[in-house]
Image: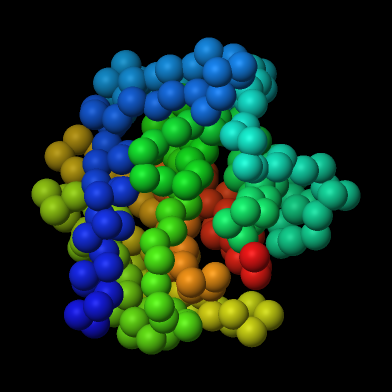
Length: 240
């Protein structure tokens, strides 16, 4: 596990405080897209968003307007075949350059965060987001880093949650998809003013260690968990 811990130094830089509710700034990925800059400190707090938890008709349709980075292709349901593409209320992402695909809920906005390859988030509920990161690795399979539980413990402690947050792993499993092994795990990260309930999936391919993480505020978990699981299950890597 020593090499895994060392490789996470870079990975930790990517993630640290990326999704805190008070510190990050999010920018539109293209100059020719609709101007979009949101500072997390300007987003409603948990107490302020209580009245917004019930989705109002049309508000997310408005949020959805925007453009994506050139290296990502947003496809209709007939363009590319992968898990959950026909799920109502989701949009697919295919990154041909880096060799992965997944879906995310309609209405989430693509934002740019340094060190992360792709991020989509709900601008109304800041803890509802999905991110993809990659780091180089010489390993051939995720199992070379240990069991799902071991990998989950290391990632959560070193990467996916700030050291000041109290974390708890709920479960850690593995899935074999078309001969490729993926680890999935569910965890909770508790901060002083909120608790994030999250799901992650990790795998190795193309000489890279891929991590996709999604989550929501604990108070919205029951409403969001099926959608978040759809994101996790849709994540797929392919040879490039």
